[in-house]
Image (cartoon, rainbow, N blue to C red; front, side):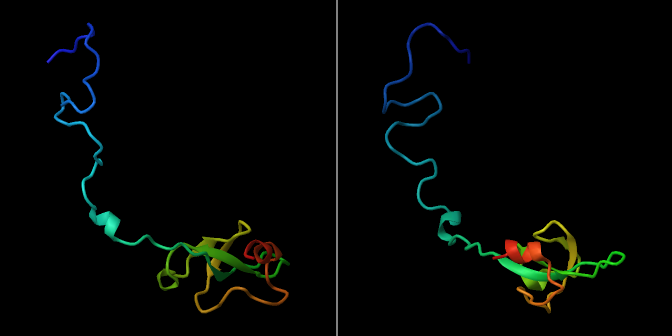
Length: 111
């Protein structure tokens, strides 16, 4: 099939096109698809407590880590804290933490 650029123009609205789609107001996917039936997931921000390593004379601090998966899936690996530090998540600890060993940047960013 060859295309021609000589006159003609587009078919009138409602007329059949060359790909077999008829005019009128129709959706691309007729009816409700399976994805439309599933309710949308509510995104909530959950912070977990994570402790960094002590470096030299610096004490280990508690940091806040934003979780994008259930706490049950945390395997104790290092995660990126809100302040940018790497810290090991402790699922048995809760955030917010209190005390002198809490990262001030994470405390401010998690509010």
